[in-house]
Image (cartoon, rainbow, N blue to C red; front, side, top):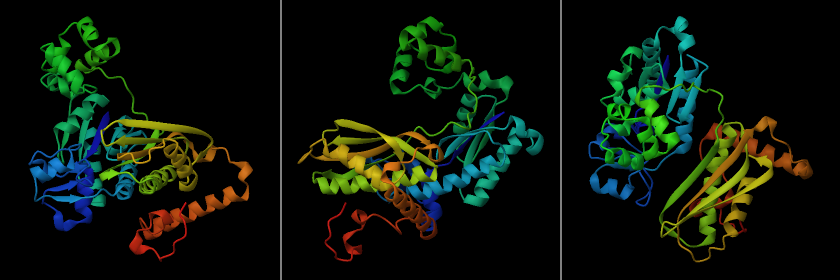
Length: 394
């Protein structure tokens, strides 16, 4: 018995929660005219606004909508609380992102009732404790549970009986199959395949020739509702990243490095909250012509602090020698993640390393007590907040 729990317009719902004066009005989470929509509430979606759409296009579609910048720290905070609710019902929780997860409740039914009863309790506790709603799909496989949650949005619950899977699945469009993106969808439509039933009745060899052996086989199996994947509760995060599309193209290295540090601050804070350290640091740079390059460096001693992480990211950026080049986006990714307790210590730094770790711990405690932005690197202090000192910055 598997549940797929998906928050309804998560970022926008949290924004409404924090800004109740906007509740019921079209609200979009997305930063700057050059950025993309991260989330839109359901009143905004009536105008055709969707996630990943350019903010500028969304503003043209709904000029009277409320546009708010994202608050990733706040979303992580709410997500942690939601995941804690899930763990009350089963230890088998597999998060897919901040706002959705699979739950295997097969072994929980004697304690909490059947799948539908557990789903109802989860929905009630999420709404009463966090003030937002979620939709839940209930099925015997992950694939069908995820499809079901999407079909009952917003604030709904749908159970697909194991004996009626094909009755539910086969009328759906081919684009609903997990793994069918725009290109694969186009190939299937060119073959005359419109519904999942069309795929199920197509010879496997035809699909393999059109899509490749692995993809063709996977889509054929899913078209018959066959999905043997288990809910994996102990799979660690593979990477933690942060990126920013600028409101205007940046050219000055100091300005770009300031933004890179801002992203490093965000990513390393998430890293420490997850109890992880990173052994590889990557940066991504997108130019005004949309050409994108990445650079990475693996380090002997995995890190989780902003100072040592930014030192590597800065080195990667400066090595590109991009003086005078217009940059549209920059991002950082922390990879090669391992649990902090199993990471080797950098013994050669001695007391200096311990001093940095104590400082980072103190900063995290201050952030937990006084909130986001209460303590931050000098480079990130806005001019109006600065004391007027003109000391050089790291």
